[in-house]
Length: 100
Image (tube, rainbow, N blue to C red; front, top):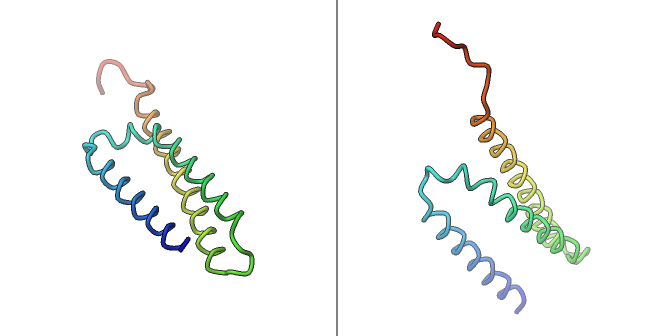
């Protein structure tokens, strides 16, 4: 019964996440990355907690937990890379004055 409840929660989370992201105009996705990094961190901590409570004798739980931690870490790191690149676009550089 716990597996069905976990699957139900996962499906609700996936549906909610899809609906939230699909309602945001494409032009706003990059600026929202810095705000969503917090959510990625929470997801990563949740994945680590789930992996920590996995049954050591059940390889399926361990594999799913490891994949969740790996993907959560990759998502959070990618969010920070994109945010850094976005902020670099708005910093003033060495612009030549007076044309070519």
